[in-house]
Length: 169
Image 1: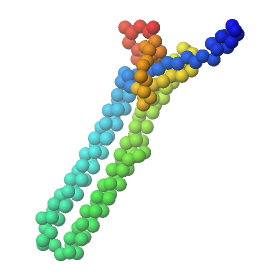
Image 2: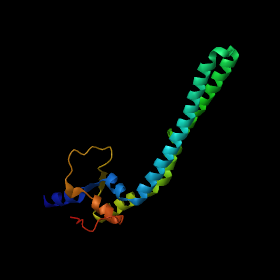
Image 3: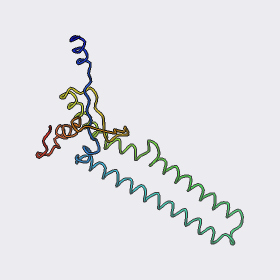
Image 4: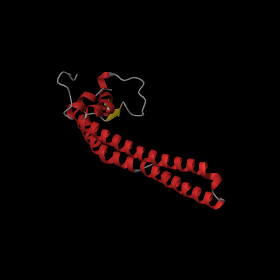
């Protein structure tokens, strides 16, 4: 019976969790990357809004001059406006769509920071002999978490971001 209990202890899995949102908030590199991404997104959004305003003005001009235009001139202007709208939709998709420019820029700027965090998590997992490490800030719902399994402070320390006043259990 003792052998069975010892075998059970060998196969017991140790787990822990950390809060990646909290860790990322503490990382200046992440804050800088996020600021750059936000600035780019704002610039692209302003550019798209300016083009949309131009299209709206063209519609207004067409409506104001409609009685003076021949059917052919009206159709030609409408076609020009529709082409501009299509180009704007394509551009918007290129910038903000799935795997668009914004997505690629996020990958470029944030991936190295995330890689650094994942390396720190891996080191903490190895140091504390954890088989499973959960991210508390992810989509996975953790109804209850015992703070004894929280390794966020260890991850921060591994990244050199721990606070001297913090005492790790």
